[in-house]
Length: 593
Image 1: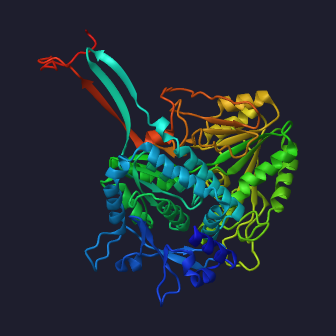
Image 2: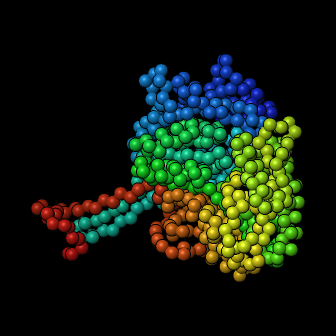
Image 3: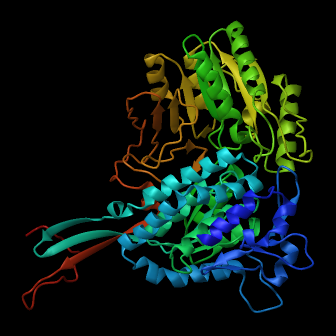
């Protein structure tokens, strides 16, 4: 803790830049500095300590850049690459071997002992100075504002807290005297070595979705953070190690495509968790499944908000839409990227104007600056792609009501900034497919697409026609409209006057359709497994949603626990008399006497 506090004091006294980082190597023990190199290498965390990348992998390093300046911060190794100058295995092989070696002891550690380590971890992460240190590195490498980065850590912490009670959820079942002296007991047991592949947009929250539940259930873990944002995962792993987690139980390796392939095909890895784009997620699910692994993958989204113009609270709805569309520079899988205005086109003009005016109030800038609302996009390529889609949408007939292209921030002129952008498709025909790229593409940027339809039925039809199903929202003061919407809408997470309806860990993250691969969610209670929908109304009432079809009832418990464990069933026959009949050559039939 003293070392942590010293690092925090040093960080706070200096402007966080690539140059300041190079001058303060003790602030980041996961960075390897070399005398003649300007920028450090990011080390891997294997078997309880930071391990420098192999000499032979130096040509395969990946640049990690500050998105606010495009300055190189560090170089990330490709952990699947073996150093040809030695017989040492690749970092990936070392990490998996360490996890495999640690598994027998960790899986046999009493569940209450594993829970206590996570309880201490949750208590440690509650300390503001700890969350601030993680948030600093998130802002430096990702670009999001410090306030948003603190929220990133907090939402992950909530899943750590949920992981501290897995003992209840791992309980099995039993039934005695199925036949004379015959009893059956089932247990939930861990899988072995599991792995997680995390995205750049939530450098703390998503790793904390993955590893704590895996560890609590008795698995060991290999985590691969995004090569764009490695430091938060390094901190999270080192904290757990300092709190007494045995070496090898949690390992962190760096890399990109080759390292992902190495995880997907490694015979000792039993399960893979992934959050990211559809292209990557579909590939990971397919390759992982073909290699005999369990795979859970949360993918892309195009989240729609429906506004009933004649009864929604105008002022609060406008603010909610602007925050959900442009916060985190639109780089959230639950960002609202489409607004459907229900009513007359003449009335929608005023609503769009007010959204534009609210968006203009948002300050674009470096995430460390006071008062900044919208940080940079993660890379120049991401910014270029977003600007290209904006131009294509205009070329295909859309009206750009607010153009955020060309945003320049004083002192950060080389940053990947895109200001809030509003694209108006005007009135659309709900019976015809919408082909404008502003609607069809997941832009992952602060770009909001607005369209107008006459009726709520039209809005529901358009929303349900979208291939994604992560989330949606309706803004209305009509209980009847809200009830109709929540019942007929297909997206897995529904907000009623709630713009970003991400459930707390008591529930599950329940995206569906093209937004998920695999059939087990990351966390939360399971009661109805298939086509489950979470409803988050802004009211004191709790709504319950049932699936439309293919109902599968299953026992309550953590969805994440179900993913990271498997059932073992033991059938025992304790016949105490000598010469008892314990079975013969015919199929056993029980319960007949």
